[in-house]
Image (cartoon, rainbow, N blue to C red; front, side, top):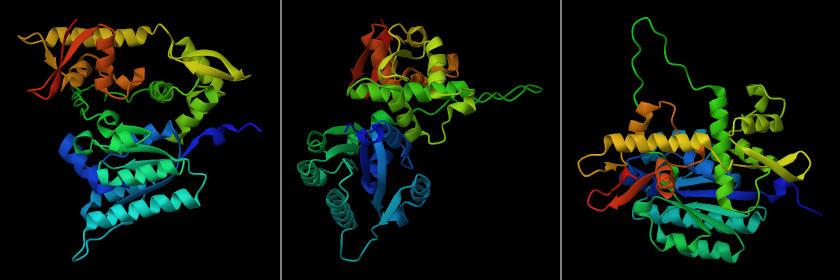
Amino acid sequence: MAATPDERDERIALLLDYENLAIGAREGLGVSPFDLGPVADALAVRGRVVARRAYADWSSFDDDRRLLARAQVELIDIPQRLGGSRKNSADIKMAVDAIEIAYERSWVTTFAIGTGDSDFTPLVHKLRELDKRVIGIGVASSTSRLLPPACDEFLYYDRLVDTTPPPEPATPAVGTEEPEEPAGDEAVERLVTRTLSGLARRGDGPVLASRLKRAMLRQDPTFDEAEHGFRGFGELLRHLQERRIVALGEGSAHGDPEVSFPVDEPAEDDAFRLLAQVVGDLAGRDGTVPLSGLKDQVRKRRADFSEKTYGFTSFLSFAKAARARGVVGMDWDERAGDWRLRPA
């Protein structure tokens, strides 16, 4: 008997070595408190997260604790004890819980282990030996080189999070109205393109409309196409096809079309042209401009710009796509520790 769509989804247990992640994000990226949102979005396109646990001495992470509780994460408290190592205690508890879940919850197919500590490498090997898929999650600057090769997939938090702050809103002149929030249609477009891009990158077969909607609901359980004026998800997709946001093809079942990006995407091309124009205008004496702060400059030209609208997870990946298309040049500056872009 063929598996139902839900049975084909991965069932993920998310376990976070929280102290390692929080300190790595703060010191390596300047992100504090740790934002779980990008991790949750990345896992949502991969399957259902059926367990969420984070391990730490929570007396040291008051702000983080409140944010994680709102994200439905179970907080496992490892208090500091005299004569003992809190770090080792947290590692041991997390490893024991992972093995317990692997043996007692056979429906869990995948473990997402959030840490950069190589001490977890034996745990990764054991989980894979038990026929479990392992996704590692860590901050690049604090992740041991031994850990990523041991995993089936490794997600660098640096590539998931957008560390560029949004531009300050302009102060309205006297007698003018406050700027409006982005339209609901724009939010839907971004959710669809971000989710479709994540599913497409996995490369595990065509993305059917039913699969796309399940992944969207995992990112935003409140999503309802009826709230945006559509009688069904298929009608929403046809609307987006008319606007050349997506392309629809014949799927394996009637009423469940295959969803992809259009081959020719004028909106995306326009975004690349905007980037090229900004780079050309800002290039200094050496003919280059640093990547840091460049997104703010693009937003000054187009306030609603977001690389996620075009299916890219970060501004860096958007810039690299522009380089691959010959729109701009791009080189790593070792001395400055930053990318530098130049007109093509």
